[in-house]
Length: 200
Image (cartoon, rainbow, N blue to C red; front, top):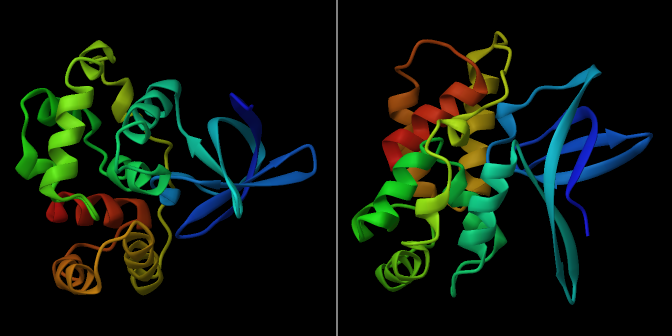
């Protein structure tokens, strides 16, 4: 139904952002909310996907069309739903994901939350040829700049909440927390990127 929305980001939470489009706030579930920051002056363009179930209607947001297309390919795999696809996309190395699928690297894929060997094999089988057509120009690595705030505890806490929202288990979150606490204070988005690198 929707292809994209253009509006102002008015709220950033561990699971979603809110995009204000002419006074209507759209709640968009995104792979990494902390790629974005609240800005009530500069409009952004978000590509979207609407998922409809018997008991829920959700909107998923994407930074660009390549990211949306990758999400749609993952979402079409048996055993992968929208939230699982979003959790996979939270890893910023989308080209690494494409390469892993092309090379049948099941071990790489099983590091994502909720992905077992059977599902990982199905991803490789279904998408091996399809993903080869996606851009290798670096567009998949595009991010929205995030301004760094002071207050390491809040930023680290938000990043850990985002990991839980993506489906990572409590023990994995605690394990990565110890490593992140040793990192120089930085933005929530960078904490989350570092965490995903460690976990994947």
